[in-house]
Image (cartoon, rainbow, N blue to C red):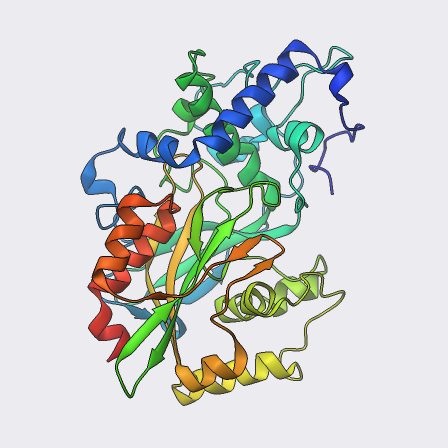
Length: 393
């Protein structure tokens, strides 16, 4: 699906690429190859006090609860009618996403010119035309507009968004940062957004990042899985390690009834568990009947019986891409985990599920300090260990 308001064009062929398109591809390649180090460099531009548990992930006041919050205690609210498919502004950022931002002009290394002399109007169009990943569709999302997790009544508020909203701001901002490391002049997008944790300054598609702990209550030992995200298959965080499952908070389909029925963090997580750990296809075709779907029913039954506990540890923003992640942990009793899932490494639609790791301090330290782990994953790993007694007690 193309960006709302954007004219669809045929994919560019290598022989017809303009100099600007070739330069764009060079920067994109550099971004993909050096994404982890670029994230660390971007984080260094913010005070250490703004980062989660000493990682690169950024946070804001009210986003970091002192103790794990049960997922069921978070109230979700819908704001007024969302910014619909409006005509994209510079970089594809809708004009209401940053009303008080200074004007931003397209820069050649972020939005190049096509062979016909026209410039791409948004980053997702350039990405689709020049380097589209295997999974790349502009689906409806729940766009985060307000968040309070540290108070007595944790609450998240949303309006309607689109997946490409995040591509057109976050990936464009990452591209701009990568280009600056190659000597290009800043395009002005990052400066116009300013504080990436200010949800009034940009569209924020919320990802639910879940660390899954298989807990053997008899021995007290726990293990967890990691996911390597294949850059050829995904539009965000390619080449990095992530916990699993992770998914954008969005309805399962385009219909209004989907948006209503799927407005649940838990139901979104159920679908991600099915897709990333069971190999269930992402295309559900129509409305999802969670009550009659055996997997969803079993997951909810075990949640209600206490064999699965789901906690929220906070909210954070990637300093490079502005990806916004709700940090959660699902603690699953080993008999239930072994009934529904597997610890064996395997491939999936977005990369590879890696061999299980022990939930131990030295394992987490090594991952966070020595491996290319996505910022949200590093943060949830650190926080999970810090709150291990509450999570596994």
